[in-house]
Image 1 (tube, one colour):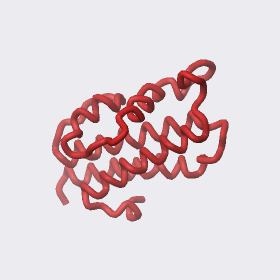
Image 2 (cartoon, one colour):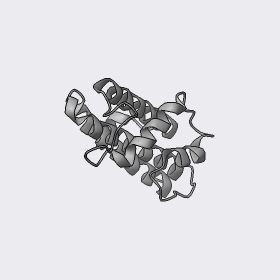
Image 3 (tube, one colour):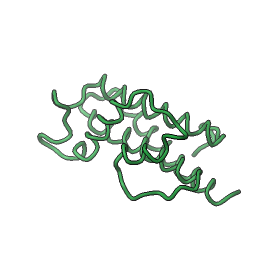
Image 4 (cartoon, one colour):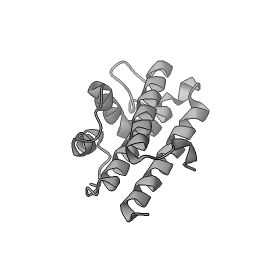
Length: 138
């Protein structure tokens, strides 16, 4: 197996771990910031998997917008506003008090579920591009 493909699959395994983690807490209202954090991580790693697969150097950043600019020729994001919102939440989602908040406060359970679905959709699309069975990733 090609070295880049192998690394890309390792990134996808890490994405699966983030998404599986979310699935355990998806209905826990007080953990919406953690759900949002893992959704961001899943999207970031999905993009990095695609970069690896396409043999594009991976930049050291957590910024989803910067990463998306590098992969937009290979995957289209239908809801760029959601990508921006998750990107803004990322750093702050790990800290207490006023951090990790949307303009109206902590993400709602509905927000968190939307972020999870968005991240999962990106993951599934990257799996299709790489021709990887998502259920085989462990």
